[in-house]
Length: 573
Ligand code: NFE
Ligand code: MG
Image (cartoon, rainbow, N blue to C red):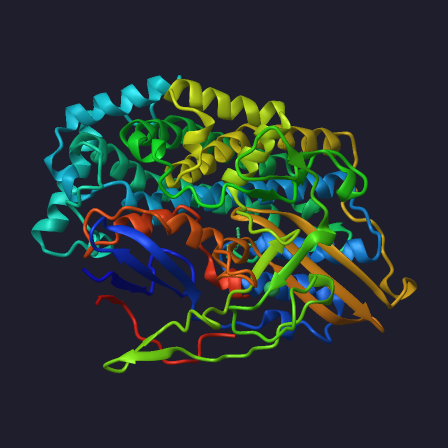
């Protein structure tokens, strides 16, 4: 019979507003076509024009309320690049510390609070034996070679009672709208209880990470301490108690990552191995990393990076090409902007050209997929579609033979009895993010120690003197680095001391972009195409895959949604 046309709008448990339209073959329940759209327009790039470049960071960081400090820093790096300013060691370390805490914060929140319920069936946990849950928790921590965060049956029992009370009152609250009982959920009741217990425990760890960011940033979200040339909060951390608090919090976070988050990934890899073997949600298998977290001083482009830059093409790990910022363009063939051809961000434009939806039947509007259908542009690297993000960083680092990254990936795949190929999947994206969190939790205390040694030796330099009035009032620059969700670049052109043009190309833009000038699918679209859906009225597999990217549409579109928007419609025709 005819194919079914599914509309999911809005996609929830993400940042911003996104709509997916998918065509599902009736006979095989397979997604045969899919379109991903942002239904929200923003305009930060336009707002920045005419401003003082030194203020850009404070405004650019309002692109997002999630990865705030990463936009702040990228914007400042773009200005530093334009004026050839290099920051002192202490500023590099403090920036790494605050960004490192952000990475772990975003990853934990993403897995437990935004994504885990695509893998974990909350209602099934009500059938769990708390003692069996304790055994499960101990078992997966043991596979990881770690001490479990919780393996006490009394804690699982209390959690089960709390859940049962929610359900008895008929108010599941945040758990109210899941596809509970769907056959694509694979964990046992005891495993589900372990995961949901970690969900609540992760809320506390999230607070610890927020506190770490405030120690260096003054507040969070939207820290205030970065300036062109360095960072101003060095005097606040001279008191050894401040960095001791940061370090103690980091150690607690590390323990949670190793004792709960990573064991949960072993459990996921085991229980969803069939899905991973089938490459469910694999997508483009071409990955781009700009490079992130400078490990030494000097020009940032030349520094060794914690996450090395590069491009892996079509899953071929034998060859990595070097990243060249000149090869980034944005295409708007299917996005609601006007531009004659793909543009390099240094000369990029943001000219809205909204052409609307098209009406098919009964007044129901659908995306005009032959033409423009999203507020997200389609970034291209060397005219290719690529995926960015934590999995990209793990894959590119692995292919580069980076000893640190390879160590974490090899350790995981060996203990989980899987191969790198399994990581090309929705679950693999989720595991990549967890491995990156573990790596960050290990290195972040080294950075604290390095900073403390500098401070103890009397080095309190955290700003490279920079006289704005003494430099050329015409310059251009860029900041290209890594954000939690992937490669993030800001490009600035300064004329007569003011911003003449400003463009941000953001991780979720790379991944969520619509089709391009050659009709090729974006990373979300490509990964959803081909998915098998167990129950056509419950598009769980589609949500699982799109959530595995940790979408941030506020960032991707970079103003406020002023159009009336229908909320919560999910339809099948
Ligand atoms: Ni709005 Fe972000 C990150 C950036 S977007 S969260 O990470 O930059 O993809
Ligand atoms: Mg942009």
